[in-house]
Image (cartoon, rainbow, N blue to C red):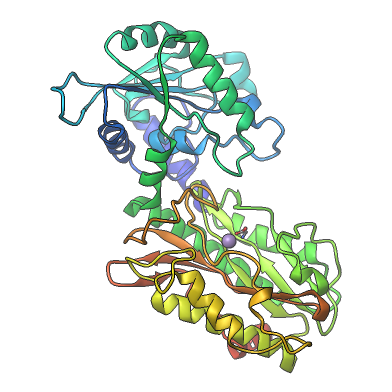
Length: 449
Ligand code: GLY
Ligand code: MN
C-alpha cells in the first residue's frame, strides 16, 4: 500500500514538472542529502583526487530474481537505483594544506532506448529537462561522454579514488575487478586509491532520513513477527511461516527480505543460517524465526524464538531466559563509547558472553558460553551486515542488532533473540520494542490474548 502511495506521489510529482516519466517507486531521502554526502566524501578523501564510482549494470544482477538493486556505495552517494550509471566527482582548485571542496559532480546515465523501455518501463535519460531535479546532480550526461570527461578531469588530479576492494559478503569480486580493469584501461597512468574505508566510515552513522527508513523496515517486519506468532503450530511447515512473514512485510511496502528468511524448528533451530525452511514443525520443539524486510533499500533484522505448541518446556524456558538476560545486560550497556565486539569491560560482546557463561549448564554440567557461537551484534543499513570498523566506539546515530543466542544441538534447542537498536546521545532506543521478548508475553501473544 505504502509503495503504491509513493509510486502515485512520484508519478504526480513527475507530471507536475512536465515529464511523462514514471519515477522511482522507492522512498528515498531528498536529493540534497545525497549531494551533501558527495561534498563530504570529497572533503574526507583529502587530496587532489577525483572520485569515480560505477553503478551496477543489469547484467551484474541478472542472476537474481529480485528487481534491480543498485551497488550500495553508489546508492548511498547518489540515491540512483537504475542500471548502467557512473558518478564522477572533481574537487575545486584549492590551496595546498586546505581540505578540498566539491567542484563538479556528474551523473552519467544511458540514453533513451525506447524499445527497451517497452519492456522495462519509462526511464530518465540525460537529455530530459528534469534530469537535474530528479537526480540532484547539476550535470547529467550520457554515459558515452564519460571517457572523454575522465581524461579532462585527470589533467588536474593526482589520483582516482574508487572502490578497489569488493564489499565483504556481497559476491561482488567480479564486478570490482571489472571496474578496476576499466579504470586501468581508460587511465593507465593514474594511480588508483580505495575510497571504500571513507564511505564505510560515513555509512556507519545514519542520517535522520536513513533512520526513518530503517524504522519503516522494522515496523513492517514487527507486524510480520506478530502474524507468525499467531500462525506457528504443530504441523505447520516452516516455509508457510516464511511465506506468511514475507507477505506481511511486503504488503506494508518492503521491497524484499533483507536476507533469506530463516525459520528453523527442532534440531534446525541450532543451525545459524538454515534458510531451506522445509521441515514441518513438531509439538514440543522450538522454532527460530530470523526474518525481516528492507524498506527504501534499508534493512531490518529481527529474530524471535517460539515454542511450536505455544508453551515453552521448563528447559526451553531456562535457556530462553538466559539468552534474554544476556540481551538485556548488553542493551543496558549499549551507549556511545562502548564497542560491539570484544573490548574488555567496554565490549558488549563480553557482557553478553559473560552472562551466558555464568548462568545455567548443559547436560554434562558444562557452562553455556561454548554454545554462543556467533557475534553479538552488527550494524544494519543498506546492507543487513553494514560496513563497520569494530575497533570504532559506538556513536549516536549508529543502528545495530543485538542478537545473543545459545544453540545446543544435543538438546535440539536453539534460541536467538535479535532486536534492532539505535544508539542515542545518552544510551539507546530499542526500535523493535513493540515485539514481545519475555516468555509470558510471547506465550500470551501465541494464544491470541
Ligand atoms: N539475520 C541474519 C544475520 O544476521 O546473519
Ligand atoms: Mn543479524
